[in-house]
Length: 109
Figure 1 (cartoon, rainbow, N blue to C red):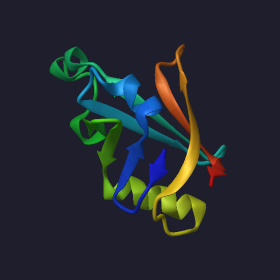
Figure 2 (figure 1 turned 90 degrees about the horizontal axis):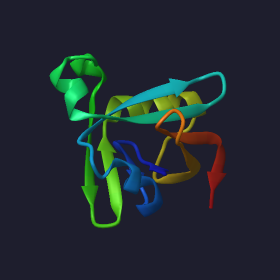
Figure 3 (figure 1 turned 30 degrees about the vertical axis):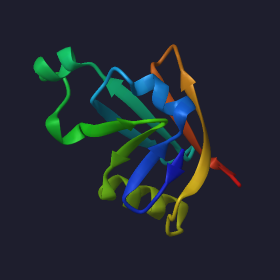
């Protein structure tokens, strides 16, 4: 996962988990410095199980996914105490929790 000042970009391996979804929620674990990105089914949105302010649109392109949200990126930059400009971080999909976990302790490249 690459994190920029305005968006989170998912590579092909990460984006494949979001192909069937239009929205996600994002949680930030400040203590462990991790981010959880959870796909939200259309049915949950229709039933208003998730507050609208917690939903973030995920755009899936050819070979990537993008979640544009400057506020979330600013929060991550504050947590890391550094400006973000496409830094890469290791991520894995937790099948049990059905969410992509981004480890901010493991920058790549």
